[in-house]
Length: 317
Image 1 (tube, rainbow, N blue to C red):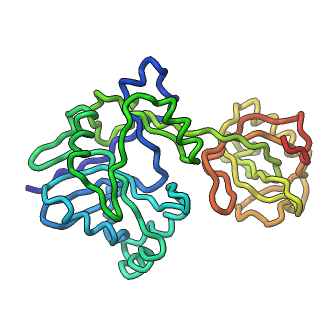
Image 2: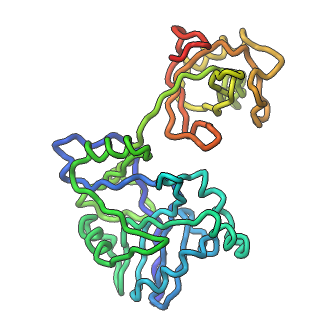
Image 3: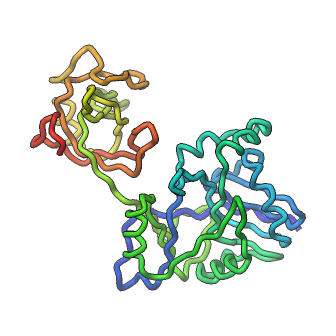
């Protein structure tokens, strides 16, 4: 019997459930990788599909052995990651492995240099029937009972309750955050559900605005994105592009400030590879929120929080 195609269930961004409700949730470490649905027909083969449904099996040859690790038909849900030196998932590192499905030889070479690891966290079909209507707590028990642990895959524990302590531990370890999953939640294939909540650690940083990119449509003439940096001993180092977080009033205020500070030359040490950039005197200081940094120091998922008129560009904040 062919395995059913199942689109992954998605989590909704949100806050940690209050302490009184935490016993009704399971908490998993939020991984920073490529979501994958894993199809195991039970004949020794495996098919990996991305969130979009694309076949990515050939990009990860080290995961082919999973096909013979479980001699039963199954559909599993998980995340493919690459670990950094501290054992944390590193999306930038994994990017060198993504998109290689059409180049098996290159994928095999990259598997030696940047090994992938599959984190398993759900089972949605087993033997001859779907488990999508079973509550999360039952599916996790079934998954744990499969004993799927190998050199390139594992089934980390889900912690019931103790969400506050778990979140503090992930922050101390430099991890991205948690996913809280209601114990009674069914698997809503293809749905971004409020039964699963992803909680990211929010980091803030004072940055200096060195440029901007005009918006389009109703935002014509207004900033669509700000190009920000950090002041270092040798000059202003580019830290990334911030394109969200303003109200209409704040955007208009920023537009006036940017026009008044316009200059011809890029103020960053290295010219950012951004088309249509306009440069400004590096005197505006703002506070941004972001998830993590890339190895090159760029901010990941930054959003604007507020102007900091109380800070001069040379201040540390």
